[in-house]
Length: 224
Image 1 (tube, rainbow, N blue to C red):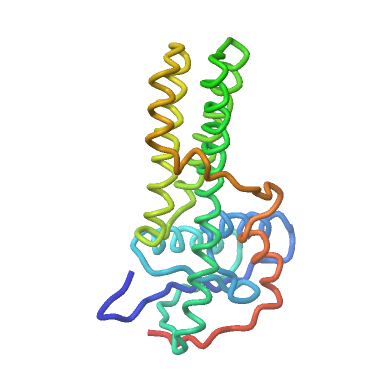
Image 2: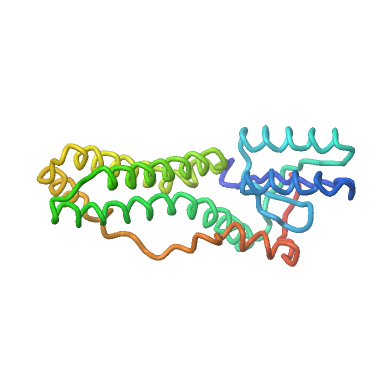
């Protein structure tokens, strides 16, 4: 994503016919799924990579087929502070998706501590933990599918994968009612158990950024 110390960005600029409105909504949702930064109306940015270029080219082609116009530019920032602000917004958005999986696992592991202390496990708990794990897996897969930031989100992505693996191991031990081994596992990984914090499931940095995008000021960028 960087070349000779200069970070390159891809900028997609487009115009879609006003009617039917479903076309505009479809393009907007596609860009949200990619986690693109709304520079201003119909102007979106992502760090340059082959994957991002592939997605932007496909989207530009789709826009042309629906009777619109689309252009893709390679740009660099002239203001480092602007660039860091945008990159932070992108990372906050994607990392929040991975952190939700980590927090869900931490809450599950915290409950596992209580079950070990009580020496308790039954079919109802088995169903509850299995459903929670399935939701976490779905959330993680969705986050990975929408993540085009590569190495920038590697730490958050790896942390979520590690937390999920630990949850799976704990659940397998509980299913076998191996409470001693479960306790040992949880003690060895206490930093995951006591990690949970309150998470607002109704909003995310992505949604907040999207809602404010129409009022955003354009940073200083130069085409390359």
